[in-house]
Length: 435
Image (cartoon, rainbow, N blue to C red; front, side, top):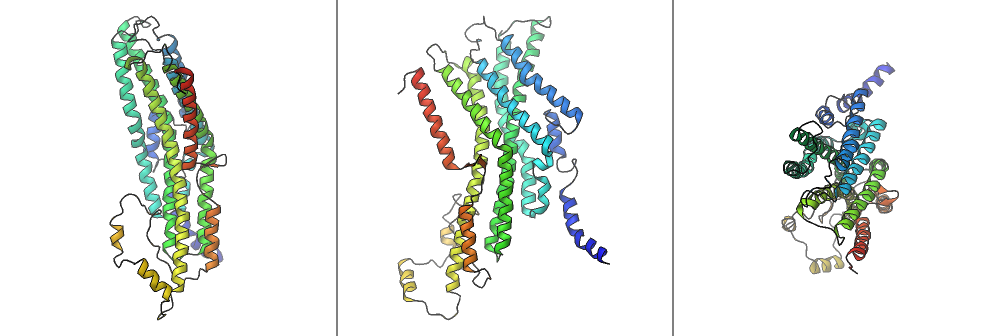
């Protein structure tokens, strides 16, 4: 009898668990299909071998052949490629970093655990629907960043080969050889930029899940909640943010260092006195720089958004504490308002229409960071000491993405920008004499 009762009590949880933790061909079916097309899927031994083979060919072999055999050192001024070494090293470097990190993530955690899909059974319906919509939208965001860069690179490569950039008939015919070489170079460019943007977009997707959880967590301040349950949920969010930080910290730091070195190498070569800058020579270098900086901005912006939302939760908790404290003194019916309150109402009149100020607010405010009063519950069992302890905990335990202990927020970005600007000015002072 006791076993039957225990089985009945565990049945709802088991149903919710099976509904969320479905097999690999359910909610991840289309996502895995695109990963196979991009040759980055490593779900089995055959796919892993194919993925590493394509990585070696398009990240190492084709760029080396393009630089050493198809550089066309004796070409005219318009077909000369003096910045090809920086472009090839930059793209191959970030692609290798992205591919190795992605392979390590999938091998160690699996795709479902890496995307936190196994944890969705513990979330609300709003979080699950929002995350699944963002999962299907991530591939569109990936193509939005990749396709414009690939189109510009295709135009340049087609012009370079069709106008006689190289004349190496390694297949017996110049036209066939140039066509094959052009396709290989374009495929290599597409593969390297796609792998880099894929890791950046996946990080953005994981960060979006935490933003949805923070927005859903903020609803506890609009209902009569228990302090212990609020604390447990916030600790769970902090634990997931710590996991994300630990997984991605090496990739973010190495990407930041590598892209910074690539940009300084580009700046150094383009500001020399002997450099010849025009669209035919430096256009590919500029396109490479834009691609790398766009991926880096995706990483930094996603991390900063999480930190901003977490800080907004702290502000919301403090406002909730203040509103509950104020209403606790005004909860007695028939109480005569003190003279200080009457004078305060005369100095700061309260509008009778609550929507008058809200009509003037546009996109400056969101669900967490707003200037609206929180509906408090004066007859709640939450005491002043518990609310004060909870707010103190929020203020002294900031949540967000960290890089080896450093919180990645807006002040950290300002520090990075200051260091980058100082290095740029130093380099310009060495090359063109800016002081």
